[in-house]
Length: 95
Image 1 (cartoon, rainbow, N blue to C red):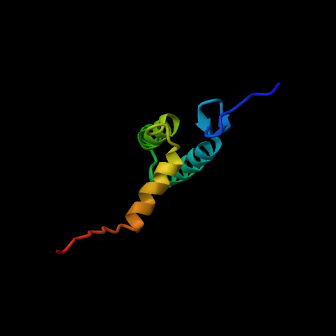
Image 2 (image 1 turned 90 degrees about the vertical axis):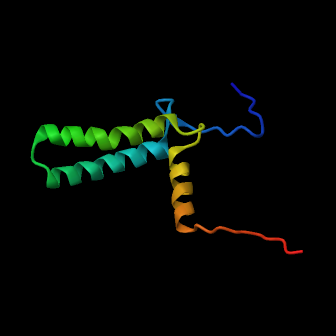
Image 3 (image 1 turned 45 degrees about the vertical axis):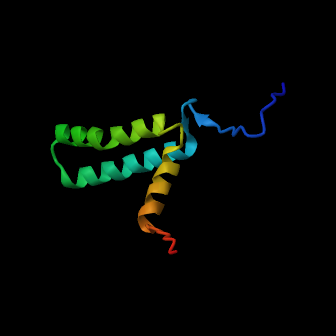
């Protein structure tokens, strides 16, 4: 079966139909690092769970929904790139 896609359509495969593979891998790596850091510094289980949910859930929700249907990793890359190379160009026209 052949499908016809427009030229400007970008077809991306997604994990479970709603999250891109690169974003899912980023989330898993972020969760593993967060889990290791929390296990090192905190001993109480309920506090571990609460801190993990507070720090992991917003990133996960942003990665699912995106911002203006953009990939979360692209937006994160653009923000980091902006803060590293923040230049303000002011052009003044002198008569």
